[in-house]
Every structure is written in structure tokens, then in C-alpha cells.
Image 1 (cartoon, rainbow, N blue to C red):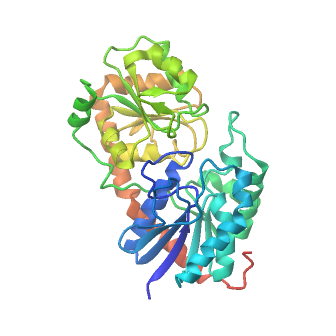
Image 2: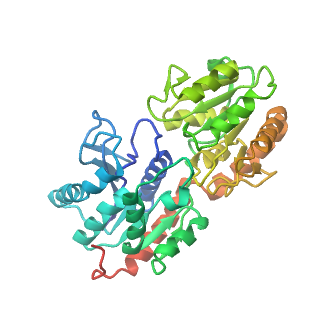
Length: 406
């Protein structure tokens, strides 16, 4: 009998055409894990909420997987609204499961919104429930961010209800143990699709952009608190080589229109820096891979914890990374080997390291190869799925159907 798992990822559709938004990294991890788990012998259903009205209710995800899109929800959705929809979403998903006679060995929820629904599903099916909290508010809190009490309370309560918790980095363990000291905890680092992120000929991208040499690259959010504003401000105070160009990929839909950032602060910086910066906006994941492999170096100026997909994907592409000592960034960078690391908010040192790699193509290439070797061998999507499969087997073996997961 085929083993089948239900992944619940309501806020991050693994087949969303444009990876991005607040949970772009989660979207990538859920997709890669779901595809690779099928190679481990699992059938995989992923329950989500459609992020675009034109997306179908069901879509294939690999040979033994599918995406099920339940309630039509118009984003953005507030934390209070998600909480109010908990029972409705749970009942709708239960109806789908029962009507389609689905049987699962395990439920795995991603982020707190999915965890609320997963508690109902696991109780109804009497199967174990694994939860991945992803960027808990207590973990990623920054001065610029405000998080609701609803979210923070739910995140803490869910940890104590679930049968096991999966986190990407060991540094999060203390926070999880604080709220759920007796719940089994597993660390499974994100993995990269090595068939997508690898060395490429930079020529086509450089020609398309009209560039004479490899650019620097930033991939991620464009809002304040991510560190990119500070980097651009510092660049504006420096004398830059005429051919130095920083490409910026990411942001939410509408953040960049026709190459122009809509945020007034970023628009002003863009005007000041002129041809030295280009805002490309969000784009499909496979398109990002081409830019990763074209860059001389990738900038990761994160000011707080992150899932770190841009960092690990850059290294997999043979591109070194300049990052900060933020969890999810520093975990991947071996200073002086595959990139450089500096203190959070030390923009001068950050840009100094970026300048070193910009001016020394041989060093950048050497560091990039070192990073790629490590990621491709030890942190690919297959290894991530293999570790998850082991977690699932262990949790199922130790599961008691009388456990209270309501």
C-alpha cells in the first residue's frame, strides 16, 4: 500500500506562478519536498488556498502528487480573518478528504495558519501531525514589524499540540523548547533543486540586459527591515565603478512597475543611483536561477532570521554570498571560503566585502565553486526529502491514536 501524506500550506501555494510574498521560501520548500517525497515512495496531496482567481481547484504536482485549492480567499488576509476562518477551512478540507475517500498516514502543516486547520484534520483522521512553524513572530521580530497577538498566541499553542515539530535551523530549538519542552523536535535544512540551480553560461542574460560584465544581485523582499535599503543608501554615498550594476529581484506584485520601485524611499534611491541599480520585480523561480548563475556575487543583508533560500540557491549556482550574521544566512556561509559574513547593520563592512568580490572575478569564481560543491553534495532537495521521510516514519511508529490533537 502506498504511503500518502497531506501537506497543508494554505498561505504558500507550491504552484504559484510567481514565487515571492511573505512566504516565498516556504513555497519553494513545500514544492521541492513534495516532489522529492514522491521519489521516497510517498503519495503527496498539498492543500492550499488559491492566490489567483484563475488557478484551478486541482493541479498535478509530480506523478504521485497534486495540489488541492480549497476556499477562494482574496489576499491579503489579516491574522484575525485567518483565525475566524479556521473552522470553515477545516470543514471544507475534511469534506474534500471524505468525499474523495483519501487516506493519509500523516499530516504536515506549514506556518501557523495551516497548523490551526491541521489540528482538526489530524484529529478527524486519527493520524499523527507534524508542524513546521516557519518564522515564528517571536523568532523574526524586528523593530519595523508588528505582529498580532492572535498569531503569536496561535504559534505558541500549536507547538504544544502537535506530535512533532520540524525546523530548518538548530538556532530555533530554544524557542520551540520554551513553549513545547516535551514535543519531539527535528532539524531538516532546506534543500535545493540541483537540476535548476547550477553553473550556467552568463552570456545570454548579460546580452539581454546589455551588460559587459557580471552584476551583483539581490533576491528578496524590498520592504524596510530587510537591509537592502541600507545597502542602497551606502552605495549612494560611494564612488562606484561605471560598470558596477546591482540587480534587484523580488518584492510583491505591484512593488515594481516597469522597472520602477513604487516605494517612495526606494524610488528616490533608484533615481540617485541611476544605471547602477535595476529593479526587475518578482519573477518565476526558474528565471531567478539564470540570474543567480550570472551574478558575480549575491547580497544577503538580512537584519533578522530568514529561511535563507536565496542564500543556499546562490551557492548552489556557483555564486558566492555576502551576508550578515542572521540565522538562515550565516548558517550557510563559511567566511573566506564561499563568501563573507559581517555583523548585522555593519553596512560599511558589508559593502567592503561586496567590493572585494566585484573587483576579483577569480576569487568570486573560486568561492562560488566551493559553495556549489557543498550544497550539491549535502543540501540538495533529495537529501531534504530523505530526512523528512525518516521523520515521518519515526513519528508514525511512535504515534498513539488516542493522543489529544484537537
